[in-house]
Image 1 (cartoon, rainbow, N blue to C red):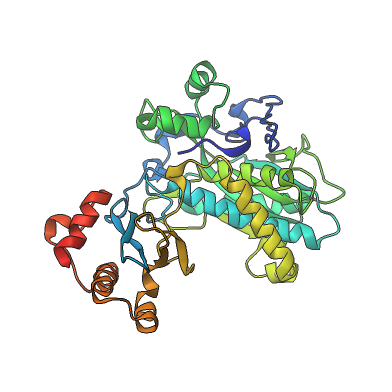
Image 2: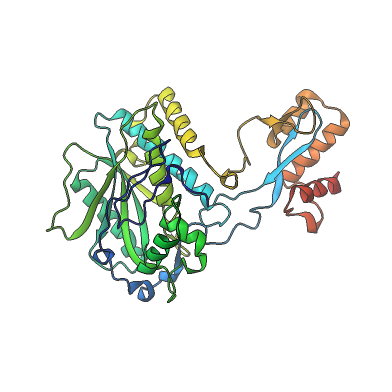
Length: 397
């Protein structure tokens, strides 16, 4: 996985954080508090079903993920342009970064849209931990609903809840403090990269322990309620997330950095499927249209979000363009003036342009392979390189 934009150093909720501002690269940890307040570390081994949980990227990839396939063909020479397929699933080790990026972008667009339409625009990040054991999936999800009610009571108006099942052990924190560099991507991402065999539940050497907690990201209100000693739960307002400015990248960077990091270690259950994030108020799928800006403003929000998300992105995290709605995918590298057209446009293009027979044959072969109408020999059905993909095409011409 790639490092996160803005140098954010948030972790699982037992530290206050501040997202690094775009362009400054600054980040600061304000202070820590005792994770014992948030759960029993022994539950990391004893909790029922804990070994069925994992973070994004710790599952199995789709059989076709990573194999090369045709994305487009040159309208002038018929040269096929191929790229590795990415399934985009959050459990896939190849695509977890892509999933987290796209999921973060969607929520930033939604939240910025709500902020644009509201008079009070301040956004923030908080965390709720409940003082009870949640050792079943049902209890974990009920905890998410309870955390949302607590957020409303504390003054949050339009917000998302992102649930995390685990925290890092003292040993994991020591490893992070001793070994991570100044440009670390955050404790969870760092542990996933450096200690993947120990980033799991249910084993004595695990660097995680079972301790569900619920992050709140969204629009605050003018009168927020602070945490109280009488609360039967642990509530922490972590940070304010930049002022709203439609033309300021910092306003988008703070939100994207927090979402992107939180999605990097959201809980995935092997046997149960549920949403990684649930929205309330204007962030809910049932009410968000009431807070939708005009088409022009929405387009500006989307452009700014994409700009921030793409800054510093590793090439390996760039999503494949499979099924893209774009008609043109760039210039051809094999001829002087060719333009690459989307592979799914081939039938219409052939009918309209009537290319020469040799170009037509190349286009049709590439198209029919992509749509599954023809297949290369068994050893080339899932090519793992550009060269193998071209060998597969030659075998079908």
